[in-house]
Image 1: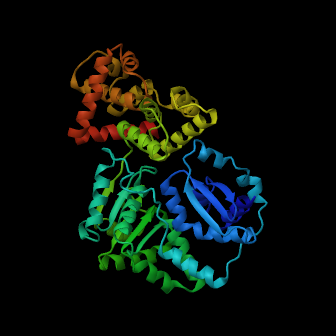
Image 2: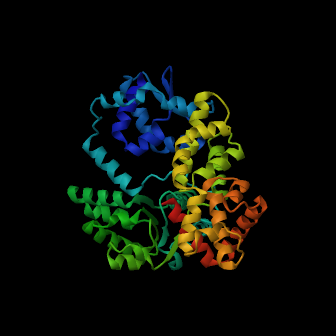
Image 3: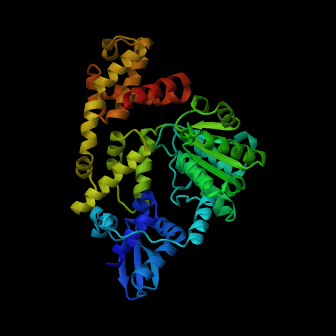
Length: 459
């Protein structure tokens, strides 16, 4: 099959992540002199058109010996399109391992391609502000990124440093700035890279004797986006080059956006001069999404994929998957796959079957009893007082906090939580959860305690 042969070559020409995420799920159909590819949504087709359609067309023409002259990419709205793509025998491990040698590009063409890629890293077309779900945990970061877009290079937020645990949307936000800028100014010079790819490109430029070209590419940008900057630790030569690139862009009032898993001053493994410069602009934290935001993320992801996800099912998934957005998306993908495999609409039974492994793990790790114990130890008060009848503030506040955590992290109902807290009525638990939400907004210390306990329980 022609598409099978094309896939084996594409697997060798493209990075593993790009191939797995964007190419493998495509469904192919050959009609006369045309190879027609189907993608699940318009964003997908646009990405393929902009970045890979030319290469696919060349491969299809070569491997069909001229029989195929044209490649089209269309949206496939048929149910099960993504699943059937994953099931294509062309992309089995055995087929890929037995693939012939990669197509060799002429040296000059390969060098030009390398230079071009170093100037314009791929931005994910799905990473836009319109597809980013905002909540209390990320609202400031989202608003700041929009402001950066309107005041590019302004000293008060240059560099913009987004920090927080993995999988919370930092990459989405930084690339949303890049996508919005390119939409407004198509000729803007934007480069997105991870710290790891910066090191790889710099080392490659050293090996090829093209350091000056590398410097010119990096230092002539309007917007530089660097993900996971903490991974530069230990790469001394690359750190020095990044230091000078960073300074050159700031001197020209060009915008820099960085992400890391920690606040700048916590990056003690990096050069102190560089860490100091990271703090010149604005640092904004991104926190794990609360349950309302997790629900909206699931509903929006489902809508963008053309999936009918009932709200009660989104609520159930959001109650079970609390760590980060990537795990939420993974859970949703599994639910959709099981639903399509069984040929039934998504309901709670399908969701429970899809998440049975997650439910088993959570049952062993996070329970109301465990939350009570951790809260008791955190506030250094007897466990019996957490569930006891005393209403003095020193016990009531931790008790309410524990109820709020139980509601968010366990998925237990109000009556079930009430029973675990000394047989209290469900209305008492509802009041406690409302009080926790209110206190988190009004009292920074209380909010910090809540987040600390969240991290303890989820670690």
